[in-house]
Image 1 (spheres, rainbow, N blue to C red):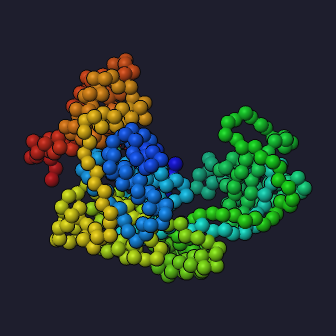
Image 2: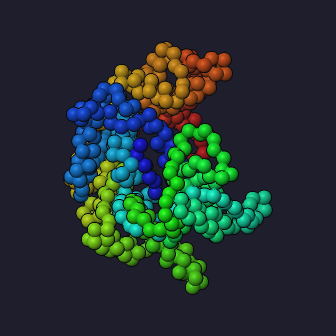
Length: 457
Ligand SMILES: Nc1ncnc2c1ncn2[C@@H]1O[C@H](COP(=O)(O)OP(=O)(O)OP(=O)(O)O)[C@@H](O)[C@H]1O
Ligand SMILES: [Mg+2]
């Protein structure tokens, strides 16, 4: 499963919801020749768009898509977001994949170009090979010094820890401060664990467990990896390969600068990253690449509901696509001919022509009732909802007349109604009942019109 990264912590919850709607999707469901299998990897039908998406994945892997983008167009609920997530799953964890929705640009805390810039730089990975100085060994003993939480007297927090690490040849006891102690606690490090601590950054890594450590308890838990006791000294140098995003590097550089400003008593907390810091990061990265110490891993930035971008955001994106550090940009929209935000001009999908010019466009068609039936079955299975065949048909009817998403959203309420009637299986009457209780958008508009005079203005 691909690591889907998000920009900004506040957005994470929203993103989780968005992804869980698509939790049944595991890939594009293609055979060895790249031909879509009608139902596979959680996807149903939409054969041509999936074939196209398969070609996109191949181009991304071969590095043949830089400086260009992909646009999915189609009506609501036709699977555009689903297909973009399927692409992420296909690419796997090595390719950074960042997802934002056009609406997220308009956050109160940050300028929209800053939100976009962060998203772009999160989608570009840098793979480093570096020599790190580390402490590695099996935990023979660990003790925490606890103190009261400064704001909450009922909570205790670690202030420091004393940890003894051992190899076959050596044993060393380290006194560590709060930051490392906290990580040891969070990772639940205990006797018998094999860990290493980065001597310079203090990052703690848990590798597995080693059998036969005195006073350590061993349970038969699944998923625990048993390791050999390491040899040699506890403190050593090791080559480590890691991939970080340009955005991670920006943050690290900014954090360093903030530390300096706070030392000098300037209480200014900058949320935005100084362009100068980014320029320095880019220069460093370029230097490392030239020296053969790092390589660039261009990832994918997926911008959903791209019609929410305004003219300023679009011109920013064109600049990004032309720059040397550019991710592959995938967009999706359900708008036809519409106004470009921030202008009076009308354009296809609300996207300026010079941007459209750089895009390969993949049309996504509305589903037939048969396709919707299969999608609803997969979702019911995923959400653990048991549907009678008449309930399934009722949902298919709702999906065709209203929308697929509305039908999918009715499944959980229908399950609750069925359970209240003492049934595990959802029947057609339960579906009909919840369809009366919860209306879709067009019904809610009718409702608002009918009672217009009584609504607050
Ligand atoms: N071909 C498919 N196979 C399986 N599930 C699908 C397929 N297409 C869509 N779905 C599921 O149907 C629901 C609606 O699809 P999705 O959100 O991808 O539509 P969309 O085209 O992005 O719509 P919008 O324009 O409103 O954003 C989601 O739960 C999605 O996972
Ligand atoms: Mg969508």
